[in-house]
Length: 367
Image (cartoon, rainbow, N blue to C red):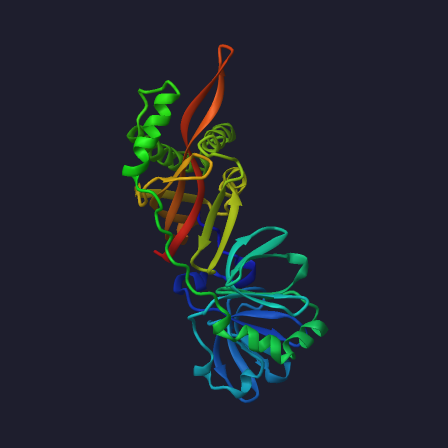
């Protein structure tokens, strides 16, 4: 469930081994180079370019430099006048989106869609259509999309650069959510509801076990979907069965990439049928381990119960028999226990079942 490296933009096989911080140099013509700055001289910047046609050592005259974005996502509009140690190698305070109207949004990019990005700011989540974006700044993925003349005007605006470089605009880390109702409190309520429905033989512990089993089954289906030796028919069946484990086909699966520092969210049907099946590796292995509850079940306003299951995922992508990308991700799976109605022999019965919900990323680290 890890995203493949964004090779065309900011990543290369050589860089993948070192996980070095990425720098982005923007030329006055609007073109951008991604790599690591090696030397800053009064008249030029020497850089090891790690992507694009210009891969390898390169030199850019200072007269052609519009700005330099360092590993901490700080924008340097006059980098040639700064010492090399002022060009940070990492430690970004937070991501940033720059709109074409020169508005700067700082926070965490929580969703990457084809038509929009969502950034979590101090004021809440903000959706920005890609058509309205002027720039994206996140670790390993820095990109400006304006034409050269408009980009010059944007970066000449001191207020824009000041906002981009102001760490106080980054939202504070969210406080961990508290469990509102303990299992000891809600289990008797569940039992009473079950008894009233005429299904007294069902018990709360049974559904806890079912939830863990469905999580393990999802792991097995993912292994089939990513197995390039299996037929399309087998994979289609695995996709269908995996989607059936979720409450809705539009539940979100969050994926991350330690190399680029990016995170995206896919609807589960798209994640299973498209994203996993067409990862551009010769072979993929995804293993889940340490699957366990990390919260009690909580009563929801609609009468359902939710809990959180934690797991550790190990991802490996192989190219030409070699490990091209690998990471270990800690994930949380939302579990939902709710009733649904089913017509049995002309009678409508109220039944209980457990479903998987959204799958979120807690942390990702290189392996």
